[in-house]
Image (tube, rainbow, N blue to C red; front, side, top):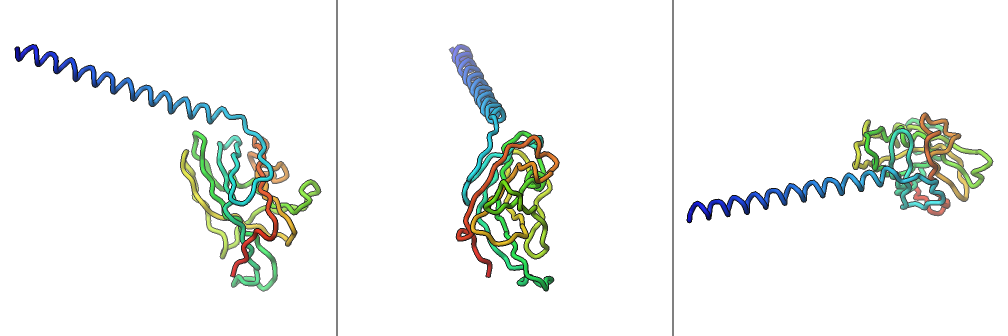
Length: 194
């Protein structure tokens, strides 16, 4: 009797273990399918996004979701090292790696240009580092990680602006393989630094 009870217990435990392994394999297969589907998304240009919105940009580096959190104006004469007057546009961004490979956030953001209202007529600025405003972006952003930081532009005041990533005029290293995303905002939406 004890022997039969022992055999039944072993059978029940074996069935439970096999069923659990089967569920893990199904869950892993489902996650793999979801990742494959997100990586097979055909990237399209996303134009006219607003402050607070996000756009998916992709290139040979990978895929990233960029969110323009806010825009701030800093007058350069408020900075310690400057004796001239220039307006700096500080773009507060969040970037999330939604691809399969790690990449440098700085390289993904390298195609960023700021335009005035006449986007098609030229007049743009590339972002630069300003010691008292900029902070270095982390070196590598792994898949499913996100980071926040700023990019800074020296640009004249206009009524409306466009922050564009993936524009060929940026001459960024990987821009030829990229789609384009743009954020449009009015001067009245910009925060003034104190």
